[in-house]
Image (cartoon, rainbow, N blue to C red; front, side, top):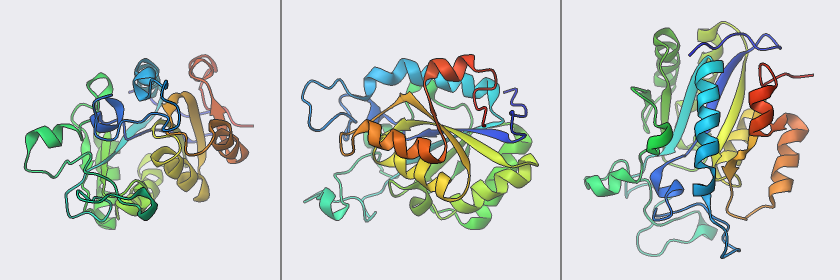
Length: 246
């Protein structure tokens, strides 16, 4: 990973949201596809774009961070009997803490872009853990995998806030984020909205994400663009530093 200073003098962080088997595989437990369009191919359509975006991140970002649901049956978000999205409960998915290896497999990042030897921010991390993981990952030049118990990474991992703040300290300059992943209108939008609400510069790669049809794509993208930038993969790859702010 070469990283390097961006046009704004910031450090770049690649941020890849929830590209796990249960969300990305058509046979997964909560496969991401448009819930209102039976012809929608779903998230499998962006695997090659995710590969290309991740390759760009590994070359141009100072650090690459993956997030992922990492559930046990006891999590408030999980209801194996009567899940109800209106009450923020869902069937078991991404069961990284299950004793069943077949269930755990659904929580794994897809093989095409799986990180090698990441520093893990555990699902039950503290703020101190978040700061420690940020320092270790930067010092060793390793990717990070943030495990979370809720769709929103800032709510689903108590160490995330300190992790993000500590990245700036560890990298020695302000950070900006390049974000891809799924689902565009759930986990990814909560990540982008959350980072922007905390004052960070965010570039979202529009063709390296997929949604559930819960919010029109153009509405989501317009909101992100109102506070940051939305680019295509081609623009990311051909715009020099890929994150040029004006």
